[in-house]
Amino acid sequence: MNQSYQKYTAADHEMWRKLFDRQMAQLPAIASRAYLEGIEKVGFVAEHIPNFIAETNPRLQALTGWSVEVVPGLIPHQEFFEFLAHRRFPASTWLRKPDQLEYLEEPDMFHDTFGHVPLLTNQAFCDFMGDLSRVALRFMDVPEAIAQIGRLYWYTVEFGLIKEDGQTKIYGGGILSSAGESEYCLRDAIPKYPFDVRTLLNTSYHIDRYQDHYFVINSYEQLYRSVPDIEEILTEMYLAVG
Image 1 (cartoon, rainbow, N blue to C red):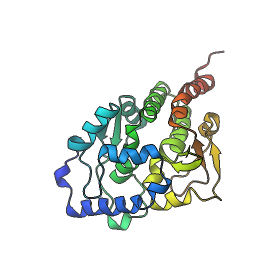
Image 2: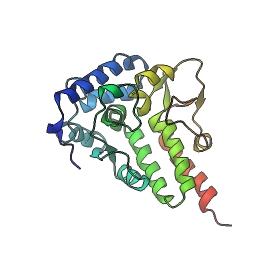
Image 3: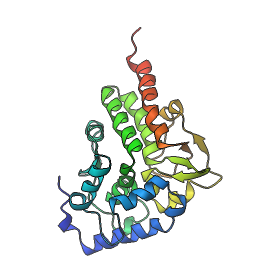
Image 4: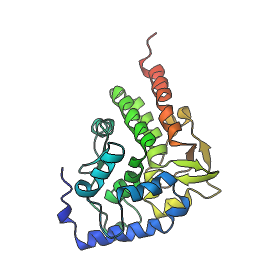
């Protein structure tokens, strides 16, 4: 699919600006350093929606070899993980309307692009997603394993927190693109647990409200190094013989 950039209206660009400015008013103090640096590296600005072909992909390709792949919306697991395994991040192109400012049932391009793309400039994070996806493809015929990988993906790529310089910061795209959850997740009263592969594989999550708890990594390298453990655990559970 093509982004069809010329079809974006003035209202679409204004919605992007409104969402961008709202998030950037709070994220510099609470978002991961790698994410904030990534916004500059991919050239995201308030004034216009990113142009994947002309702007975003050339920058990503030069930095980490990744690119943004346009998709119509939510896609099947097989297709989703195949994209990631080949260093292509699937993103929709439609943008929410004014009455959807606070809540969407399905992620729009602001979530996909603003929330996720800046971290595609971080090599360790990219390597984690690529390797995790190759594990997922190996277990594609085991629905229970795919569900567990989905939980781990949810609590890391979508709703993960990271410890930086003794402070808890946000790196999950689902939080970074949400004004309310960006504030909520860092409250002292909200439980935050250390990253642990077995725990994440077996922890359910919510798709229609803020999470009850979050998990904190120490570094993106820790994420990347966890993939062999993930594969070993799933192999023991589902593929081990005898």
